[in-house]
Length: 167
Length: 433
Image (tube, rainbow over all chains, first blue to last red; front, side, top):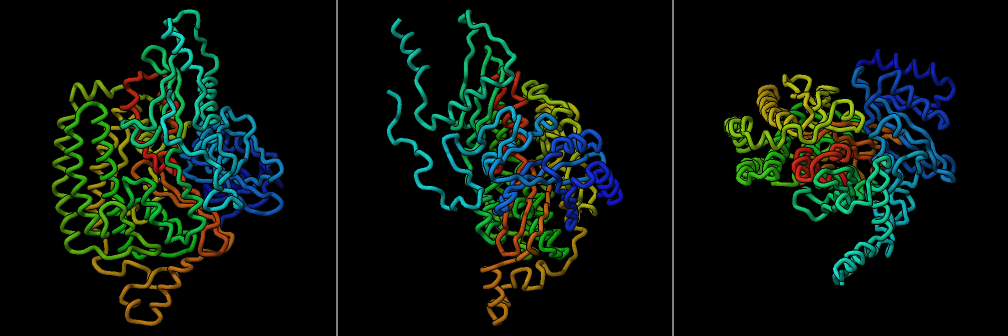
């Protein structure tokens, strides 16, 4: 983890985004950049094609439980060439939780975006196969939202019948 | 003719359990590579959809594979995961950091020690706690033993999937020795929970050191014997060579992790990439191959076990002979049992640690990854200043590997499915969280 390389990369992103780079958080080892949601796909393409962040490690969602910009989605990417790990963060509204997909850039975003959809109900526009990944489609709640109770909602999932269902 | 009608009735019958889920996954299989054209006029060319799992012994847990077959070739497949989803990320938000640690034992249940250490390192980073040097070395020894234990299970089951049963018994004999070591080190054979935030629970006993040294002496000979038996074994090589192949570009694109990624020629190992604990002071190699098939994964894992032995030997040489194994600061870590039983402050601090625990600053966000046996295992923690994490995201290696498996299985033979799943070594507890 070379900090000169890190600063050089950060400078390139600053030059590229200008005011759309809202916040740079460097308290712990890895930089966390909060950017304008409108420029997410463009920035991801820039990160991948110009800055060589070819390995998307993870996509994760968070519920901030605020009235505006309730959710955030964090993209966790690695540059194997420069040995850097960067985090890119965008805010998502509760009213219209839609983001552009990045599966066209990194195939590996497929399952990670499905997981974010499953847990928070954030939809990804242009995703090739946006289904729930852990929970069945018949489940109507998003369990990692803060209002979802820890013990679950009684009756939300059908239990298998105790008698065999073949005739 | 009546039997034909019956067949049609069966195929038209709607699934009764989770109907929407079943329909969605069949629809998704239909949509995958939608350009493939199938001639429906010839009855012999009819596609067949085969469900494998979730209750299938070769899927190593509860993985469901939905395959569309053309003869014996898989034209496309979909994986259905989540049968072991316990929602541990939700549970983490309602537990203190230390309380959550036993749950990590049950994620990748083949290498619980690494999971404990991964959680502790992440919490130590976000709460800015320095762990004593000796504790870190003991953790490294535990992690490498866990790696050997996990790879041993992979070796046994993968070769059993390929048809040789006796190997399973031999690797489990070695695993039994590792269980005995963990029993002596941590007090538990399987779910160890030995690590603590700010150190480890207890010092290695002389018996434990003796047992580990004995294992270090004996295990390389076993490994050599297995190499002799397998490396040039015609049946084994034919069964694995060129099976489940993926090139390095696709491996990076589909986000493979750990030995599966290294078998394609990408030397990405977190121990070298950003050394944690004291891996920067240890001399070891990262085994890589370039073929990217099942045989390459076999060689990578076998060499990793030999490297782990080297690492443990060096750890014993380099670790300080004496010293604390836990931070001596009651605001950051549990006090020792002596203090708890014989002083009032110790008792209060023990209560505070159990009740509230470590409180990282409000608004802090940190990530820490380790190289678990199956790949990069990372914890992303967001804190709101209380003793509970606001959000804890677990980046699990098996999840990434299973996603790659969906790509790898396309175009393979149906009989190779179990070998490929065995070679990728997914653990559903890790993937489904």
